[in-house]
Length: 124
Image (cartoon, rainbow, N blue to C red; front, side, top):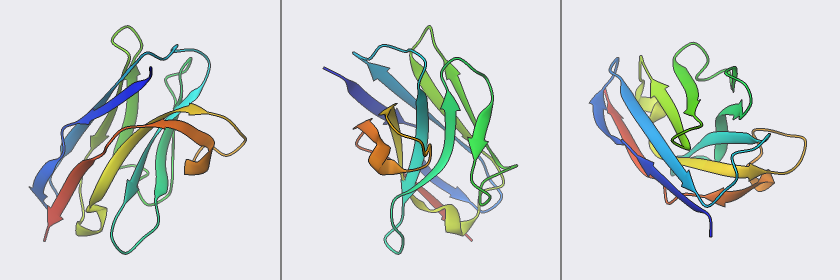
């Protein structure tokens, strides 16, 4: 049984930083994409960062590019999201996902396994 658990959310002032982590157990850490997503009350669930499990290179949407960094520790089966220069519009529930199937690495419908999410709140 695959279990995905996010850690590290919290509250921070604008300009601050937070680090999220996600442990993925019961899943073969193979050639696959894993990603971070977020959802605020005003927006749909959106993919923000993705990484190929056999690579160190991350992929980002424009809204977080240059501020967020996705990384992984394959031995620990843990995915990370380092967030810097946070803005109030980054406030959202953040989710980690694995088990990508498809052609679009930011499409949440193409990920099979999800965590419960961790809340990030950025105040101005």
